[in-house]
Length: 234
Image (cartoon, rainbow, N blue to C red; front, side, top):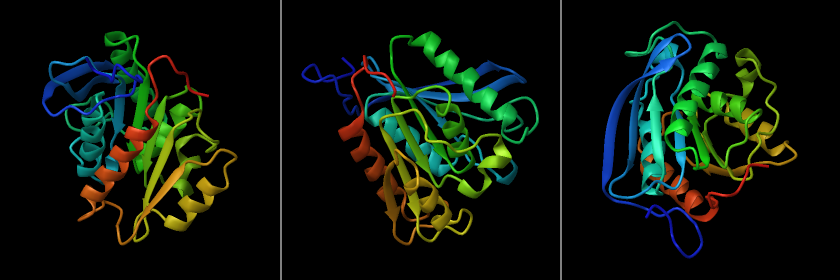
């Protein structure tokens, strides 16, 4: 079973299955890696979005990998994928507009495979902006954003309203030299329904030397907040 029979919560699993896919996207194929608990039904589907495509962001980014592994260890099926123009994914960078369509496409693929499961969204940097943009329109049971680029949201075509979720974790390093930590925290704390905020002391943008801390923060949040499958985003 993929979830605790007592309360419907997701459970950690140690053995992991891995699949590689070339999925159909709006601009052509999208390269993806799917991981899920071995010999267990997943309790949720999780989509993980990588950082900015023009600055080396790929599905193999260490923060994106850490987020995906945290989701799988909590019992979810986690899909990392390359946005258009990255790796084997077709197309060209589209300033957050086409990338939002890429996210919708891979999420649809996951929902077709596991239609009964709740959706979790995870994103790092540019990827955090993409999951925030989608969750402003389409609810998510769980949302995890790491170093969201609050000063650049308007460039990616959305107004940074509070996302439609009841379970939102925001992790920010206080030594981030790419995303302004104070801009992120001021934005998040000013929302009507702010996220759970965790500031990692001494962590730069890519969490070098702090990935274990990040993993523990996400794991703890999922253990306490991941809802049962019949819940709905607010």
